[in-house]
Length: 419
Ligand code: EPZ
Image 1 (cartoon, rainbow, N blue to C red):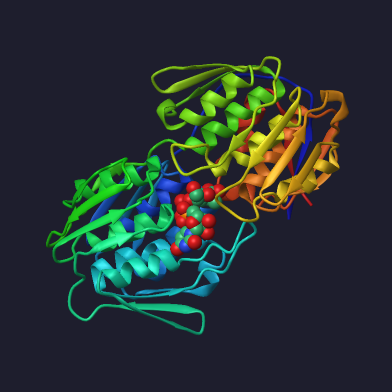
Image 2: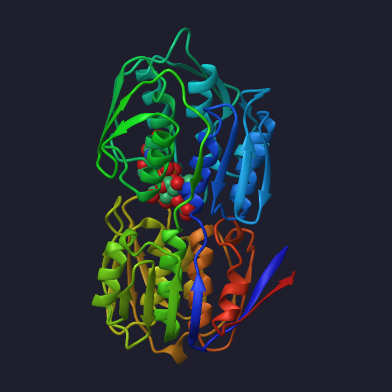
């Protein structure tokens, strides 16, 4: 397995360009299964997770080719409707093929994704939503079998709490249902909007983009499409936080500043100089004040930036209180940060971080446990004094394209070595 070696204590300077959004690429790739023909998706990041989604689609009969950040996919001859355990267990977002397969074939057999490091992450909302649309779901030996006799029928689907992939799955299943589907308490994340734009371009009739109330008028069929993946707002936020932690002056290009309202507010409260351009941020490290955050569905503070923000607060002046309200076990990074000298106390879903001086937080051997926890450790290692070794970095490579090269270009001393 590979590990990262980071020499901390250096400022970051220069320019970095963000890649396409992992959490938009996954549903948009899955959506190509709904309409047979040639699809073209631009700005698709080359990540472990997008490669897994393409493998799942191959097992279903899709063929694809990558040319730089553009992917061509042909989904004319689907040869199967089953997403196997060995793929789904490596990426739970494989469940996103359920909606498209139901819309296209009226049948799907997908391995139930297990839990993951950050929580149990059930898909009961997805299954209940499909049942509202007339789908029968059964669970046999770890697989969900979903089938519908005639057509899916429009209905009202209500989410107890907003679910990003739940909303995406119901949207993709409902586009060719007979009648109108209303989705209440829908997720409002920008990635859902990116999917709605793609489905409407394919001929769907979806109203209510960016709201928690979506209306889908079923149409007879959809046509293949050419579209573009939105910039990755979580990668953008990760680099904003990294610059704030190390000090320095960086321009982050190719992003959509309107997608990070809560982070920008919190960075300014923390004393960081951050300016938004048309499609860029300029971030200048400054003194750091402690700030409290509570993770919430969009447009609240993203849970996918909680671990990174906690690493930042380890270097701030004062005490920061972080509430994680979305996932029940998303503090796996705490123990690793404590090994570097961070002063963090956890009480249930609340973490209390007492900031320390830079020289009091030292490099160490640490272990990545999940995607965003690994980003948190990279940020802490960049800002800490001395050398840090991060093992199990396959977690990081699920969601960050060329992170080592991008950070080296900004002046970080970071290298990947084989363990
Ligand atoms: C998406 O996961 C993202 N993944 C996650 O990003 C992100 O953390 C999460 O949304 C929240 O923003 C992708 O988009 C591929 P949810 P998802 O359904 O859709 C509960 C990353 O780091 N819930 O919005 O799986 C669930 O347990 C990843 O890039 C149910 O109880 O998250 C959680 O507490 C991590 N039953 C809450 O809802 C369900 O059927 C929100 O989960 C579905 C969800």
